[in-house]
Length: 451
Image (cartoon, rainbow, N blue to C red; front, side, top):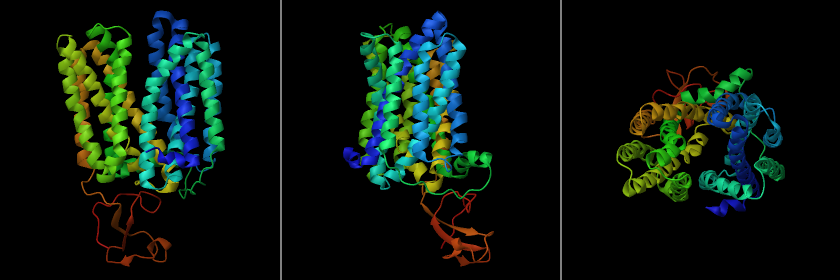
């Protein structure tokens, strides 16, 4: 898997991602302490609002900034966003009002909403071979999981020798290091975008691409299934561990660590597995596992707290991590085969926005249900959402899903270059090629035709 690090450009970009993730992890811990300093017992409300602001920025900003992807060099975008995040992180220790926290968090997450899709869209061009790209996707998944395990431990270690304000300095250093690494990377020149229209047209193209492509609609449904299962882990773990099992705070980290370990193990296995199986054959069974695991979680939280139920919870969290990783990691491959090279920034920006809209739905649902109806009901409802989403994805995503599709053009002149290999029929000009939604193909063929 680590052979892809021999590619200098990818090595620099991956290292930039890792150091930026560590900085973000430090900021998460520091922000919690800052909220408590400002709001005291209302810190949870402040953090909950900050999380909502983060999701709103992710959902709303990414498609808009993606509309300008063809006007600004990718490296310039990523460096500018890293510098913005570094500046915001340095400002946070000096805030004294809650509203200031909200404004700065919006700026910070808006920069992330521009950086992440731009970074993600560059990787398939840096690593054009599918085997290398698959390995890069697995490494990205591992980086996210290791960050969730490593950053809290690093923050705890640093807090033994410095105050939490210095964690923001560490965050800023991480973003500055990321910017330096991006500057040192030589990125391929972006393909020219052939779409016409204003900013609005370009901003909504990625979303239209999703709705028009069956496998991408299925991917969005699978994102909802993952969000339903992931929400109970990220929102309710502390309640389950301390409220139901009456364990100390340290056991919360143990439970979240079990989730991370499961995700990492799945990511390590996926490159070899995806050489033998299609994305659909891996992602759908993993998604169907999620409602089954959540049913087990409902049983565990309904039973009396004990040793076996605690062990069962850790196994369930590891299983959720593995299943979510098996669904999310191949998603980049699905997007890559569903968009032209020039449209990858718009496609990844849409994926970033739409997938986070799923979390924006499931995060508060997991919290409200747990508080009002109890943990077993929460697990059952979220499991029902995961099941419905997976069944929807199975229905939408054709079992036979070739890249090349035969189709007919009825609105192009006969001397158009795109029709060079086409045959004239009573219905129009017929030919076949690797099919994606673009300016010449605005809808998916309802039925494929022979060529």
